[in-house]
Image (cartoon, rainbow, N blue to C red):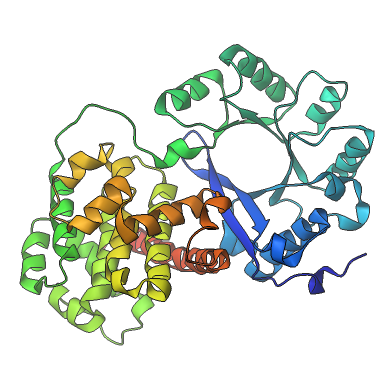
Length: 420
């Protein structure tokens, strides 16, 4: 058997994740997407071993905690990884092994799946059809993932009922519109996955709530590199809760201060306006995320940090703009409004507006590339000036950073709920 520990550089791969939601828009798991970043250069002939080395590198060197936290990790298998006992994966319980639609469930595959199930693995199957081994697959299934773009509602309903009859959960895959999301809920799907969950609904334009208007004015001021502290304080005075949240965050252990910070101006002086600008945007975006999945804010944070870090390394002349470009890219989904209407409320610089509206300029191109990586469109990155493995490295750094920030924000919210 090939020694996987010596086969490939553990940094030489691409990996991204797509969340899977429940009815309350809580994340129950992530589908992990991966590919070796330099297949042609490495001249890999054994794609199964290459895939396994990527999986092992991801789990061993990155860690499941970094990739998915306590959620499930949905990982696609190949035929050989299923039938060859010497290549059996591990991490029973948290990892869900997915059988791709292009793998024929013949007797060897069924035997391999039976062995993996007996070893304690959770299994997920795709658009199973009326084949001779359908009943066997359903009896082993923990999840049935159905492509809702390929099939009509009646076909989907029968498959959902069949999954539930066998004790499996039904996952709606490729949900891309609000109407499709509502239809999938009505059909009885348990979980949902697709690009819709980071896109806005199409609804009638409505006026912004008062706290949202304050948020937009503050973000507008924070984008100005020449903003003065008194201007920020004047805006924050309109919302005591926002001021409290900022002070709680700055007083957190993240900054390892030996004394309590007693005013916003002192916080900004000690921490620095650049960091305050970035973190204030994060907190404020979370402030208006009422009824939105937590993962939407996480998506914005990841985009913001990746844009900023990649710009720092390859486009330093636009680094100061990229955090807010990445973060505001989810603003339409967050406020259920069209991006042009929202940007009318903000006096952002023209390059930032063009990046958000039409992906124009170097700012827009970098945002587009980060989103392509996020969605697993690896080929779209190959013609760019930034090496593809830099996206992977930055993405993994960002996941760790995001996890740390979310813990701080969660601690802050928990403290705010405690009685005095």
